[in-house]
Image (cartoon, rainbow, N blue to C red):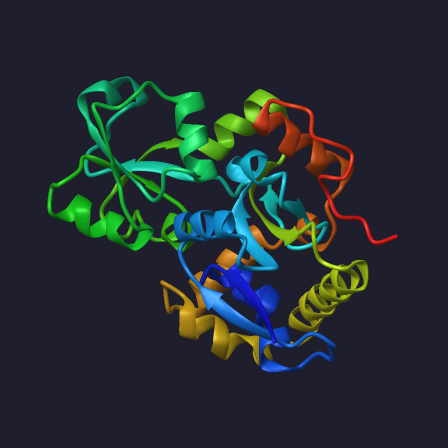
Length: 268
């Protein structure tokens, strides 16, 4: 069994469900390990997992050990993190406010640093803790990712900024949030096999979404099938199927540096 680390978010479970459940044939059955994105980023440095979901922002630190897979990325338009608050603040108010952020190494934190003044205080937490922190007045604002971007308004919060929208206006590129990383040290046949299994799993979920839904709902933060479907439609894009040249350019733009020729795994 191959240990694979992924988030419980619907886009990841949509991608992996058929492989996890054995709906697609593969020489490499997997044991899934679920964690929030900040924990996944930390796990990546342990080099324990042959295949792991990471934030794009942390990838340069992992270059000695990992390549990005050309399949499985969370990268697209209209999918960026949002800064929300209990009151209709503006970005200019941030130096006087405390912001809850779901991880220090995540792409959303990088975007906040790019597009907003430094807040009075950053409160790093798990992403499912942001709404409770806001409701208890422990923080003034929250940086939201995942399903909560679809539910914050109903919860009584206000949008301060859509960081994905700011990125798109500045770069005219899709926003790279997360990607799957595969260990460079794996044998080439195993890399090919894992890549192929992931492609087959995604295609199966697209053809038979009802078969993947039970596992998706088991791990989702929001249990509404409508919210889960919105999440999948937002984060599973053409770039998830295969990383395009535009997608690669978006990643290099976010990281503000050129990457070595083999940074994306390419089955020969």
